[in-house]
Image 1: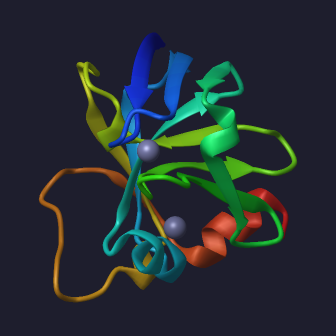
Image 2: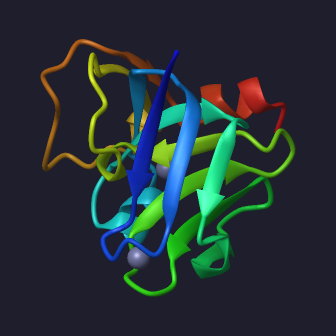
Length: 136
Ligand SMILES: [Zn+2]
Ligand SMILES: [Zn+2]
């Protein structure tokens, strides 16, 4: 686990994550692709997050179990946050100095569209497997 700093495009929101897992995840679900235009690359950060400029973070409840946060000034997608645990999955791209990143797991592999695929060797979880693991 490593500590790292992130910020949005305009700099209004600055985030310090103290517990970043460099083995990052990719989500191919329809919601992520609508939200960001493509698959969502995220690092798991637990709950050890400090946010500067929190008044600029707009939250959107994208499902009954999670919300998505973005900067209300520049629109940068910041994180996906599980409502129950409070765990953050932060966007990989907002961190400037993350090292040793490794694509580890692809979520919603059954919703991945047929117009792209990654050559990285990773674990994969289908929607049914994810729902099972969340107890939904
Ligand atoms: Zn911003
Ligand atoms: Zn998703």
